[in-house]
Image (cartoon, rainbow, N blue to C red; front, top):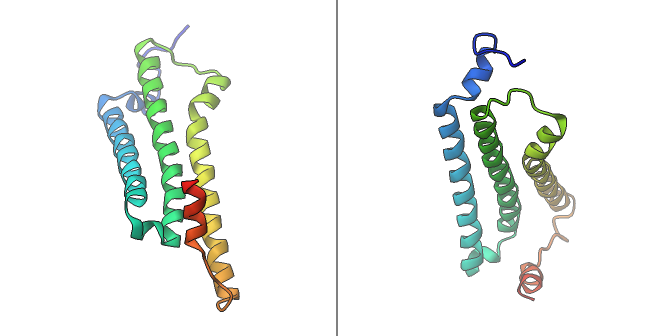
Length: 142
């Protein structure tokens, strides 16, 4: 027996609204396009490839792409489920739908941890701190 519209909480009704889902699609679209554009710029520009911080931005861009893709999947599934009248979700469906976003959040934390470790090493050993961008670029080219 499925609950009627009047028995459902307000946040569940708001979650299915066209305005909110349009904003979600727009946000995920902007997130995907802008992060792919940033990655394209880094690989296109020689001066950007030589900077150390650009590679950290690339890592964060990949994490944001995962989050935006996961948000796109989640919104699509939510619209599909609400149009078919599915009101209860199984645990497996929730895990599968939210996995790309979870991987993106984890990748963001790893990127921030890498930036913090790099900055910590630079502060501890300022004279020994050296970053070789050419080694990374040669590794990517091959």
